[in-house]
Structures are given as C-alpha cells and as structure tokens.
Length: 351
Image (cartoon, one colour):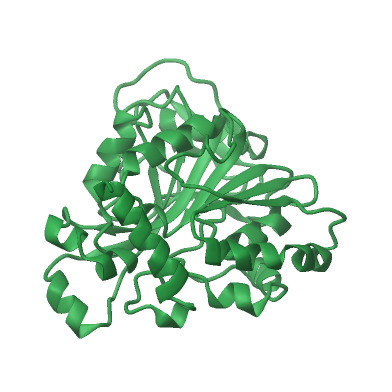
C-alpha cells in the first residue's frame, strides 16, 4: 500500500470509527470559532442534531450570491454545510457533496428526505456521493460544471493537495469561485509529525505552510488568492502542544477565482468599482477579502485583479466597474482605497 493510500485509510478510520461526534476531538483545530450569520443560524435550527453533532469544521465557507447555482462541497461529512448550502441555492440550485467515509455519508443520506421536507422542497437538490477529493472525475464531476467549490477543514487531510486543487480548477466554470476554510501552518510541518496519525486526523500535521499554498495555486494558474478571514488556533491539549513545539496554526478562509485575466501582481489600470447593493447577505457593504470592503454606492479604486474578480464572476450584477484602459504600473496598495481596511500579515494577495 502506498504512503498516500495509507494516509487516506487512516483518515477514513479516524473520522469513521475513532470519532463519533465533534466532542471526541483531542484539539480545537477542527472547531469553528467564526460567528455564524443570523440567516445561517435560522437554517441550522432546521438541521438534525445528529448531523450537527458530527460536524468537524474550522470556519464558515459560505459565500453570498448562491441562489440557483451549482455548489460542490468537498469532504461534506454528515452534510451540515451541504444542507446549509441546499437552502441557500434554493430549489433551482444544486449541491454535490463528496466524502470518502461511509459512516459520515450514511448519516447525511439518511437525513436527506427529512431535510428536504423541512426546507419545503418538492425534490432533493443535494446529491451525496462517495469519492475522493483528489479524483472528482471518478465521482462524476465534469469539467467546467460547478459555479462554486467549498470545503471546511478537509483539504489539509489530503495527502495529494496538488491534485485536489488541480481537480477544483478543472471542475469550476470560467469565473467560478473556490471559497474554503482550512488549517494552515506558519512553517513546513516536519515529516515525523506528518506521519503521526492522531496529529494528521486532528487537522494539524497535514496543514499546508501558507507560502507553499500560495506557490501551489500560482503554479496551477491561480495567480491571486485572497484571505477573507483568519483566526489563530489554540490546540488546548498540553501533550499535543508539547509534540507540536513552536509551530503555529491558524484557521484561514480563502477565496480564489478561475480567471485567466488575473495577473501575478496587482496592476493599476485606473479602475474604480462601486458596490450597488442587492445581496441579501450584504445589504450595506460587500467584503471581498480582509482589506477590500466595498460600502454600498461608494466608489473605490481597485487593481486589475480585483476588478476582474468583481466583473467577470457571478458578482458582476452587483457592481459597476470602469473599463480597463491605460496601464499605470503596479497598483499602490497603501493609500488609494476609498475605505481604509486593516491588513493582515498572511494575506496571499498584494493589494
């Protein structure tokens, strides 16, 4: 059995047999600390307790503007996020949930009809499939077929992250969005820790070094990904902390788009973007990333990459963006924005 196969088998056993609910976790790495939007809380109140009890997420990777869209949830587990997405995409949308663990999928599938009735849907809009996130083709996900890919604290568990991201950008439609939360490390995790099954299952030793993640996406053609939010992870287990040493971990939510027009640096084309409003989730302001907050009706200078993310994606209907004309060199990320917004040190974009 190959090393990758052993890792996948270990993760399957950890989430299928070792853990029976989220309280069985030995650390806080796979426990979300992000505030849940009020509208999402209302949906969560309609979801079965059994589904919620077996949730192992580290964020809330649910972007806006999902109605009628096709969304792929990688590592859907018992279906907590998939059911949230089901309500958000509505009866005309579709959610595909992929997971490799039989025990998790059995819970998700068993509650499907009940959840659809609670949501008032005449037919299911969620399709749970057993499969590996490294091989979405085998799970029947076609090229350029998905509007949004989400994942919640799962990609760190994959032994072949390059293949995962390659598959993501294969299945995304042009202009499609990857929006996911995961655990990241501030340095490369040593091999002896990566081979620790408990540390791997706890979402720690499989965590990517932030700069390696940036390089990997760039190598796959995604030259600008954005940090939406982040929070330090407190392990809260003295024994594991002693083994981990000085490595620091963070839960980071990232968004990236399948856009050929995005460059590897933020270039200045004199463009201005204005959020017109219209998003139910963001009536007053739209947050693209941790330092791009667009107040409704307030013009904001943007780089070419940011302009592309707003006008060449499903967000286009909510923005007015001036055309790209003359090139003025690199975009000044320091003082050109209409709204000042505190930068964070781990942002992978340059503006």
